[in-house]
Length: 324
Image 1: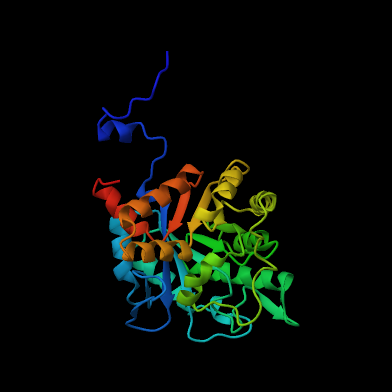
Image 2: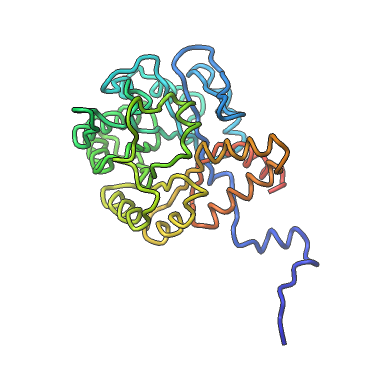
């Protein structure tokens, strides 16, 4: 006797109750771009629907995030002044520090995550200090640690080092603890590939490198075992959460990393993924709500405990409406 699954007669409520993979707003993190200045709310052409905010206009989008009950927001700063060392990244009055203080003052219960990198702040656009035309790993570690401490002291709940410098998590953990920031969590970009899917983000954040590329310190897309090694090293150094980035093209990596570490794993559905879906749906070829939902579900199905996505607000609103 052949027993077949019975799908057609059950109600939607039963399908929801028996679903193997489920989403909730608390799983979602929304990336936000903050530009130095005042009164700024400007469109990002390469990322339709996304905007840059100045610290004073930031509460407008954060209020929506609070109403959506999402897990948190991830801040990327865009300073007016850039230099070789990216000094505005750790300035007490830097754009990201201003934004964090504003967010925690207006919405103290909102989880705020600060991106810790130099590419938005350096004149050359690389994630570390340059010596002799090359990115120098070890001298960059102290700078990244200084950035993390400055964000923590401004009120960040979590710092997210994304520069992919070897040893960055350990250096940041040591500096945070020595500075009395013991409660600040580290969400490390442990597995960040040298991907072609970052293009729209680099336009949004003004972070494209002025020479060369980032293949010497970001990961080779052909490697999976290296991802496990990087994730385990970051956990040993003190990472509380590890990120796999990008999302959809790296589902196999996400699943492998999830099975290898004992901390929560986040997946970052990056700007290129978002912009491709937006462009396709704008042409009427796909239904945006359906495709965004399915793309997010597959990240959760592959093992993501946390999903960083530019669709976080819409997804949460759809959940609250009972559609998802």
